[in-house]
Image (tube, rainbow, N blue to C red; front, side):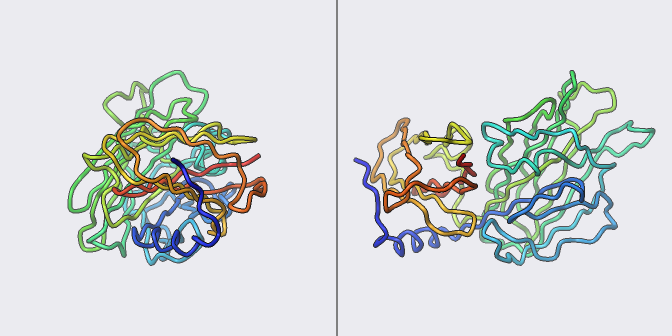
Length: 309
């Protein structure tokens, strides 16, 4: 049975969230002319000799103490990305998905097959998960990129940016070494473009105490979906559990204020659908804008950006 908490449980919700000690950081890679407003970090310099970002902000606008430095530059910026992200990509702002950094083995006679950045100031005891988006519209070939994230372990994944407006890539649970993680991009084995173009448009980084992807639970893009997004009336929140877990859903506005929360109690393994009618904990209609949905289980937390029309 699903029971909605009211405002008297506000402090309990924040204590529960803090217990997981999660931070979420968004980075937009692209042109300085199309920077993403709000709580985004804008990386606009494609040169490895450019100025690092010494203190990234998180999704509430607070300083994290994390540093960003492009250790391997890209060729240039692409501006023909998606202005209407859907599906999993909808949690990224359209300004972040419209442009990207790119590399290639033959663009204009330039051979630059890799690009990458380093994150510093991380906690070696925590886990860092990366959700990656890249798009290049108006092409007819496969422009697959291979992304490699390295800390105490190395994890990889591929994403095809060709005409992509909805797909993202998850690389989960890398722990830092000496407070550092490196992120490298190059062309993937499935790339059919002659010049092997590859792109990096936007990245969401989640910091958690416990792993997001564990054997007992599905905690990836297939484990939590929301639709429609943007939503006008009712938001369908679908989630999948491989084993039983206590679950809760919370929604925050862009200033980090709690809008709605529901404790779903103990769910057995299976697929669940929770419907939110865009009312807050007092039963009032929630205003249009951007919001952050957090789905919490005993294994960790997933977040989705939602847009209310």
